[in-house]
Length: 211
Image (tube, rainbow, N blue to C red; front, side, top):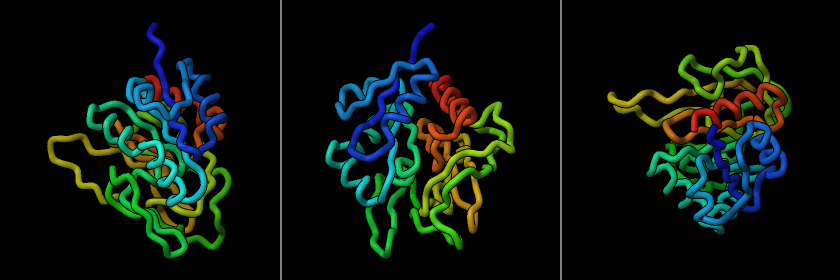
């Protein structure tokens, strides 16, 4: 049996220890790295992220991480973003009235949730579509762990007729927002699978199996 190799991108932002430990439990060989060759050669690349959108993008650019992501996707090589690692895949983020440019892999803007209580912190259910690979075999009532005040709240990327539509998973906190996206080789979750117990572990196994 072939063991998948996973690179966890180290760009100064992200819960690297928890993510690495959770991924290792899937049976994959995991390495934390900012080295381009290692990140490009791995079967899968995980881009974690915590904190502010602009700060994460600054750290990502410092290690040319946006180029690593772009090069992998150009070759159809899987990438998984987590939390702010999902947010920075969009065109831009707006925090406290300040706009920051993202990686631009998906159109759209990450903005503050319209909720009375922020951050959205704790366990919440999600609405996953039937064509999801990440949520395959996971009960619809399962809860995942969120910690965020910002999210993408619309999906703006049109789907060409000949391509399979992306799998969009939604959650609600003061309004609908994207909890996960599966779009070809690029997947992402707004919640933390590495902090979501057995359900998060199963989601990560599903992703690793798909590599």
